[in-house]
Image (tube, each protein chain N blue to C red):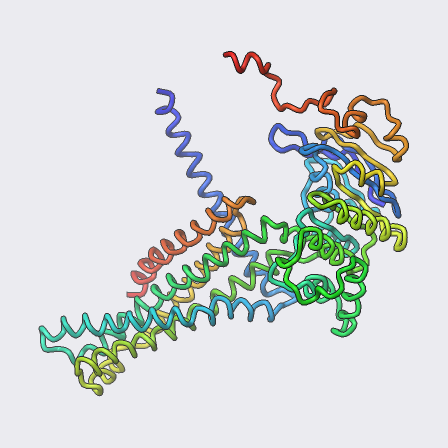
Length: 260
Length: 259
């Protein structure tokens, strides 16, 4: 269980997290939805301790990560897995070595056992047989699946996904969605997914949090979000170009600017 | 008009900025070296980096050393014969290589070959999120990626310089003795009597310093590169330019201290 309390983060005058309160419940898939620049990736980076908030708390199994020492943080991180947007595979290591990496660093497991574990994880993501390839030889979707295999190799209790399906074709998206669901259902892994893919979100989410410029504007189950009457939520999930959420960045009148 | 009044402010801001970067790079270096000696030690990583900075630079150092020695042999012979002192060729070649050219040229070549690659590699790791990925696996990226590079720089450069010196002296021998007919015994005899321990110590001290400077500047530039493709290319260029300048400036300072 991760509890976020009163989280504030500002970049200059831009408020990325505006007194956020939310929780990621154990064994549930929570999806953080939001447009570009809504502060969802920033929230994820703060929850994982990659970035320090200006104020507020992130309670991970009772420990406040924002005040934890490096050793405490690293101890907790061994229970976390993370799938980065670009997979973040180590480009100088083979697929096998990439997945075996956390095991080699943190455990004394013998080589033949590591081989078995890696094979099992690769089977889970459907990429057995790619062990000796380099990351650059894989497609984007395959890289993300390898990234996922690496994220789960230490059997984490919680996995964070940063836009797991962005830039993928529909089939790869479906595969990743199914993997997230399966990991959650079969291994009871808590999942936190940052996404702007509405369809994929509705397929996998137990709970949805919608962020809008640093504020949580809606929170609830898939049904609750679908039936929301908040015009901002309706616009977001339907992808309407017109609505209370402006598409343009500036308040200046277009005609005035053109004609001036 | 306002620009003129702003000038002191701009100058001040620029200076403060530089001082800040310098301080940050100092902390970066201290942490990287300190962490390098903490557990878990990763000898495999260190050996890999020594292979990259050291072994893979052998060819380029060999060629540079050989031609430097050959040119010195040619120039030295040309000048020394005017005074009838060509017997001193051996000591002239050896002293200029051991004291100055060996450490400096070797460091410049390593900067071009390994330093640029180091900055680019670190920069690319940064823009592809590999540092946060290491962080998320509870591994300190500074310790894992940077420490071995800096230690490898300090270890490799003196060895490469020693290799450069030997090849350079051999190059001078090829031209001076084999081509221009200087007496072989005089070439090596004068060399042995002219080169003192202080010369060799000075050369080693210089190459140690340069190794540290190259690895420090190049990895810092990569580590602090802006997370964009332009950022990485700028960091790579700056790494090479700053390292090369730092080598030449440090060389002057060290020489003035050693003489």
